[in-house]
Image 1 (cartoon, rainbow, N blue to C red):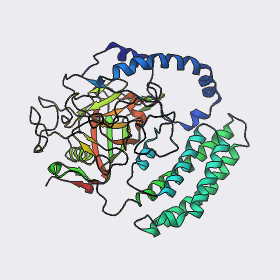
Image 2: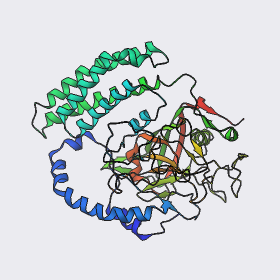
Image 3: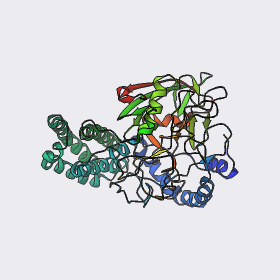
Image 4: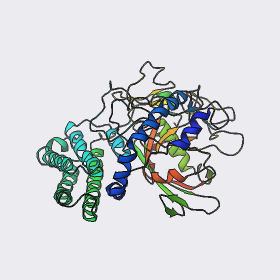
Length: 453
């Protein structure tokens, strides 16, 4: 598949993909000055281009690679969110604050109902945002609120856990890290802006906060009810389904032995870790995990890399996807491909709806559980006008927070987001067509895959 409109190709040469957070870079005086000096000009250029991008994006997004009419994504403005979207909230880009943190999005995507832990999550994640932007006083205020919740709301949180003692141990560990975090944040306020001492203190704060939020994930995962399974209509029981979450690790190399260049650092191979979410997309995720376990993606080329998405999954030969036993409800592709239905889960719904887009359902603008708002968000490719044409081709979205105004993401509700890259997403910047997936392995959660009945 290639672009059908020159405007997007031109845009890709003007606007670079979004860059993920790098603590040290954000603390240097030079980077702050550069952002200040260029901010107005950059905003003017991007605002002028965003309208063109959006108009083109409405008909050009990730399709299966075989020459079908393309349908290309739009992108929305985003920063870390500090609130949980409701089912009636407009799609993930509404307003000026959009959550683009993959691990945070996965936490909010868990099927849990405990307001205390959601408030704790808001404060802990806000610490990270404030540390990255050097709002030290605000970070200390968030820390104070988080400590208060841990100290006074433990019983209300553990009451939602499958094993209260396990959650109590996690909370105790989080409490123990609060004092070192407070010390490093307080120390950062005593140093000059831009000094090495300030950067060292903020880096330490960032590292401690990261450990705390990983424990927060463990705490919330304990709150998923025992035996919880996202409901799926029985007609799809002849397709693989993932009942929960799984982890996939992937290694990509360049065919000529060249290295990956990430901000001047060279790597012989690109390694990525992805969380695949069977809570939000059990059929799509099950299909992907099944193919990974079969070794389908091993030694497969990257077939598209254009600055907007990186896409693969088209095998050699006539078939445009995985050839296998088809579902009776969806049928097979023209070359015997096993097809899967379009699968969309909207916030507030008990389970996904199938075989139609969010607009087809008359729910355009409502928020999906997993939005396309993070760099490295994973989506399932299909033909533009056939919701049930996906087979094995998928894409990573190279999300650009400045390319499209908030609330204009045309992927949410039209394509299923089934996971995120949580480690190594930066490698996607230098993954090119012809690079080779040398291995894709399920490292956790493989036992949660349920094969067709």
